[in-house]
Length: 163
Image 1: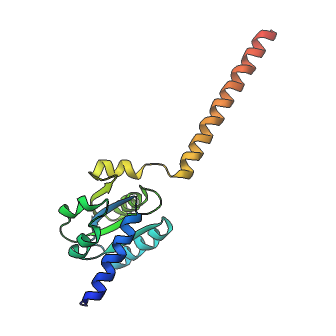
Image 2: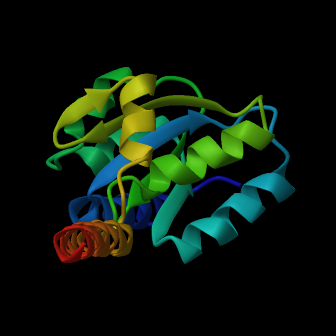
């Protein structure tokens, strides 16, 4: 279905607005992936506050101008499925990596975070960044271990002194 000029402008504006709110983006080649699987990926994306778009590169390039993701414009080639992380910088990367494990034809291309184009290793690092809740949980665990360790050392000292 052909897009008229107004629809194209709406798409550009919509993606530009999302890009300005996003913390990171990631692109992948969706070729050879069934539409049903892409739809399942979109449903999962909603849970992680990730926006996914499949659009023409010309519209995508125009929508990413004057954003922190403008560096990726130069390397957009071929079909692109693009995901924007809105809440946590690694959520879109996690989503794509998880999807890639089940669908080997889904090729992750690149990502941009903090105005830097990331390679595949850096994308994996970004995906493993803990979320806010995970960070708090890890911090609480460390505090418990530290307090428990001190308590056990104190008990150990008390038992040795009383003997």
